[in-house]
Amino acid sequence: MFKPYSLDCHSGARSCAGPESITNVVDGFTRRYDVDKLVWFEVYDDVLSAIAREKELKKWRRDWKIRLIEEQNPNWMDLYPVLSG
Image (cartoon, rainbow, N blue to C red; front, top):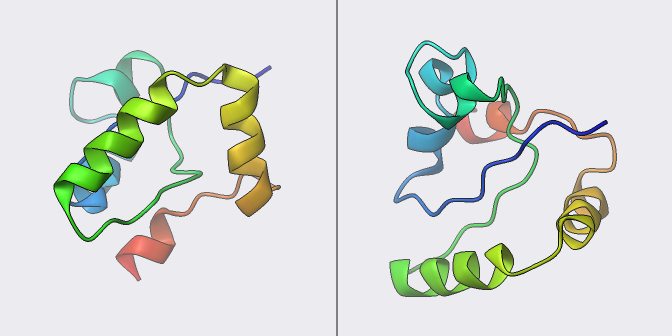
């Protein structure tokens, strides 16, 4: 069984996956659906490219998104430490 996932474009990944979000201290998607890991992210040089990719991915079926995650992160490890490193 998979937990819900969030697919959003942010100017800084730390802003959407920071400790406050991950620990569910702040109201929002992560708290409402008990999302506690960052398992995939992409980095873009400009916001227009990031928004275009976000819109593309939001049209994908869930199994395609799962495959995308598992190609880069087969064990679904929390990637937040990579960003906060």
